Length: 412
Ligand SMILES: *Cc1c(COP(=O)(O)O)cnc(C)c1O
Image (cartoon, rainbow, N blue to C red):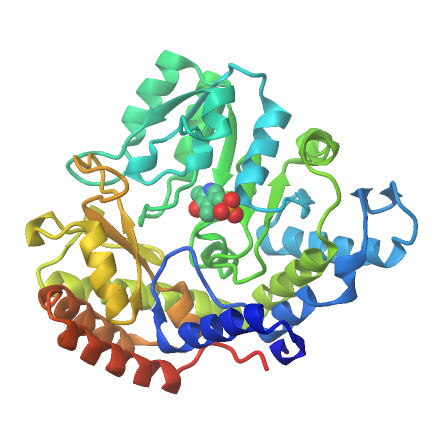
């Protein structure tokens, strides 16, 4: 497909990036590979259309087919997550969350969410993010002993600060979430509930983790992480909030939706409804748990002691390696990872004490337990020999051999 591009300057970089994605192993927890069908939908003439408004109520003509596509995406998301109402227009996860805040809150309102360096997200009220500037975010933390959420602590803070909204849903938390517990606390203090399932949506859609949608007021998710769709997001909510949410997305925050992306979302949601997606979601978790066990056997510390989902946060303090050093060494060995803070980190976010790994992408390539064992070995070797260029190059060679044997979906 990329051969249509005649701009050699841009083409060169796209071609090299495509090759990098085959040769290296993507262990970044927020990434995945879309199917050829999803990618193809993105490069269609839908990209030319303007469709401000919603199906049946557009501010531009010529939208009857776009309406059908958007309705398909909505219906599939409803079926997949048992949602009463769905908005498929959010351009990405952060604007989806902002739209929810605009719908439910007044500037200055109090919101309760997990601290960023304990596994939360920038768009959950960090001071450098617009969310933190507009609203009064108060944060809960994970328990310093267990690395897990402590519902009693969350209840205690909620009773003290009486938030208007409680957010559950995280970027770097590897345990199942007590959604019902969050809903109980919210009912006690009269707060709205938002589940941000950006990371785990695919595992929920695949029936492997508990689905908060029937329980929570609002659920947001990116479509490009475990859900394996195009870059973008959707918002799901109870019917009673439908109008507020839709108005907050458009005209509150956004203009025209990206119709090519809506079509790609519809296709990805259709793929997630297939029985094979359940198998995929199951294998993602099997792989993550297997890798966590192998790394623990090699002496690595996994925050919270393991994982129930696709990701894990590794505390590298015992190895006396910083997250940044580890990330750089692993990249030289062909393993793409992201550094991460660990709960209560004494180091700064730019060079924190941990790493976050996720298995969603490599599982899409067909990796199973055997390959996880390989990854654990390479990971350990790369960190031990991080000062040896030849050793890292040797690992990279082995990694790319496996990478070519089990490549990502081919798009040509
Ligand atoms: C990834 C993520 C987002 C933001 O998604 P973008 O598309 O990068 O804006 C929001 N919330 C959580 C929990 C995430 O993990």
